[in-house]
Structure formats: C-alpha cells, structure tokens
Length: 502
Ligand code: BG6
Image 1 (cartoon, helix red, strand yellow):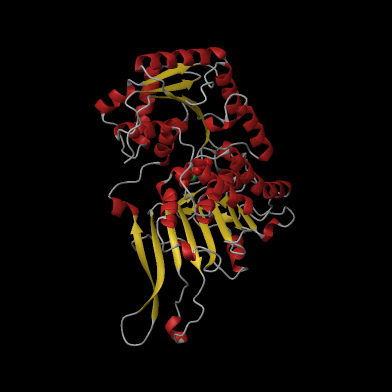
Image 2 (cartoon, rainbow, N blue to C red):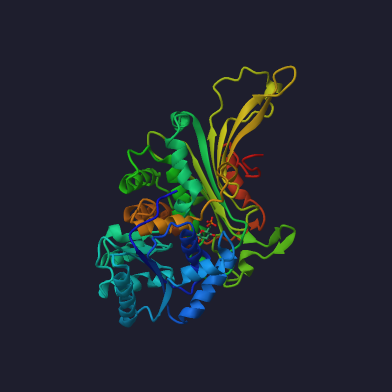
C-alpha cells in the first residue's frame, strides 16, 4: 500500500451539488479516508450556487450509500469525515465567491500549522472551466506554483481549436505543471497493470511487435444507454466522448515503447510518440477505416429498451453516433502495418472493456488438417472491466489417441488473486493530484495530438450526417458494417463472451 500522504490537503470541488461529486468524488475521498490514504489534516470544500452545509453533507452521505464501492457509510466514521467537509455558496462569476473560498483555505491552513496542497477540482459544465480558472487566478488562489493544482474533467474542448482556446485560458492563471487533465481510464488498476505486464516480465516484450502480432483489438462496450445525459451526449457523440480520450489512451498503453523510468514526463513522452505515429486519417473516405452507429430500440436482459432517439434530451431525428469502430495504423518500426481496431458503443450486449492481442499463426503447421479444425493463433486477452484479469489462449493436445488440437486458456483473475476489490479510478487519481504527481494525467501536447487524430473524421461525419441511423439494435454488438470493416481484412471481432477463469 502507498504510504499515507503527510502534507495536509484542501480539496475544493466546484460543482459540488452535481452528479460527479455524489457518484465519484465524494465516495473516492471517503474511501481514501477509510483506507488512511488521505493526509490526517484535510478539508473538503464544496462550491455550489445554492444550498447549505448541512444539506450538502446529507446529500453526500446518501450518495455514498448509492455509489460507494463499500456501500452506506458507517455513521461514526462518516461523522468523523464530515466534520472536514464544508460548503461555499456563490456564483462562479462573482469575485466574492473566491474571496470566501480564500478565507476558508487560509483559516484551515492556519489551524493545520502547515502549508497544504490546494486542489481545485472543476466538476462543472465544461463551458465554465475557463471562467473558474480566471476567478482562481484573479483572487490569487492559483499563484502558489508548487501547491495550487487545478483538475479539469473531460471533455477538454470539443475539437482542436476549442481545446487550444481552453488551454490558453488556463495558462493565464496556471502553469502547465499545475494542470491535471483527467482521463479516468488511466486511474483504473487494470490499465496501469498493462505497464507492469509488459515491462516487469521478460516473456512478452520480445513478441510485442509486428513480427509476431497480427493485429490488436480494443473494445470498450457499455450495456447502458445515454441514461440522463442525452443533452450532453447530443453535443458530443462517441468519437469525442470515448475515442479521443479513453480509447486512444488504451492504445498508447499497448503500443508505447519501454520506459526508462516512471518519471511523469518520460511516461507522457512515450505516449505522445504513439499518438504522433498514428497514420493520419483522411476525411475523403472515412468508410474505408471507420464505422459509426446509433442504437435503435432493442431487448436487453429480456426487457424492451428504447432507442437513442427516444432517450430524454435527445432529438428524435438525432444523427449523433453512439458507436464507433476504427482501424488505425501506427507508422513506426514496432507496429508498421499492424492494424489496431478500436470500437466502442453504448447499449451493447455486455459491459466489457477488453484488449485482445492476436498473434500471427505459426509459420508451419505439421499437424493433419482434421487435427487442427478449431485451430486459432495465440491470443492474449486483457480484461479491463468487468472480470478484471488476463487470459492467454493457446493450443493444446486433446487427451486420447492421435493428435487433435484444442484452444485452451491460462487465466489470471485480479479479484481472486489479490482477494480485494479493485479500488476506484477516482481514488487513485485524487490521491495522485493531492501528492502532486502528474503521471496519470494528460499533458497539453497529448491532448492536442489526440484531437488532431480524430479531427478529420469529426469533420467528415459532421459534413455528411448518416442517413442510416439507427443501424444497430440495443443489446447487440453494434452495426453490421463494423463486422464488415474487419471481414474486408480477413478478420473478425473477438466478441467477448468469456471470463478469465472460464
Ligand atoms: C465517460 C463517458 O468518460 O466514461 C461516459 O463520458 C462513459 O459516456 C464512461 O459511460 C465510461 O466509463 P467506465 O469507467 O464506466 O467504463
């Protein structure tokens, strides 16, 4: 376990009454507190346009019952935690709000007797990120370059131009090293484990290249629809919501070169190298390498579920994509001509995020044709969630006379092996911000290159809205065209139906 942090921390959450605070941030802070991973001296300040301290605390306590991995909070422990939770009520464009905040921070620091880490977490609608950063800058709260940190939730802009504009606005008050751009996938244990798997074992790295790998598949499937986020999703779509960030980050973890050290810039440089190697997409013929989809009504677990266009807050004629499949190539020595197939969608058959490394067939099969009917080249399956774990699929001789081959698996199951439920990504990420480690956060150039990659496709799809939506049923694995994308290359999706220990 990481040793507890010693420097006191003051975590200010803008948008304190919002969903993210209740679902993720407060449960994460509370779980860190229970695990003794928060500094012993800490204060959580919510900033909200309305409400009072008591009802804010009660609302958060209810949030824990619903969303914390540990369920409802023990009343005594909660009372201990809640005495370090306070609220500032004010408008985000009012300097008085920042004055009040400054007073609370100063008071807390005086009582701690030490300089604290000041974390400002922007959990508000994206259009006011810049406004709040300016407010913090004007009030002097951003001035301490070592201790003041600003955390920005995604989406970081909605294209290259707007992300650069937001960046420039942040840089008026903060330096780059103070800015923590969240991609919560990087906080997931199974995502971090990819580096351990690749670089702490001698076995895999020698075959981790174009000589042995036929192709890579990255699936992030969700079984839920857009839920209550129709309004936001209509302005986003799957390409912005999932591909520009989470999917590209997963690809970086698979494709990056070995690290010299765990230094934040070393890790981020290696990832930027991957993104820079992506062969530019063209906006002329996107159907050559990309498929978009939108779910229609369907059946999920025996229940009828509505299509995207019937969801609250969604235009009944919407052309927003809820599914994307892509084929990318990396132009570098390691991966030249190895396709990376990425796909993500809402309302798919199962919630399943999985990376599959499909190896090339052996150069010569000396077995009789009927012995190898079910022959499959080796596959390494990294289950990001759920059923966290890793499976290696290989060929074995079936018992009995003759030489018949079957595909069998070796599995590593996270939960069984470590006898503990994985901690939530937000716990890891908040702890890293408090300790001032930027490794797991997106640097400005990384954000820019990622936008640069998807921008031609964004533009192409925007200028030619689909006239075939909806084109997949809720509860399926996505549109047929996505199967065709791989079929044209003589391949098929590894539809994830198994768990590591199966
Ligand atoms: C968020 C997206 O970033 O990631 C959501 O905005 C998506 O649309 C979510 O549902 C998926 O995260 P996870 O951790 O549930 O896979």
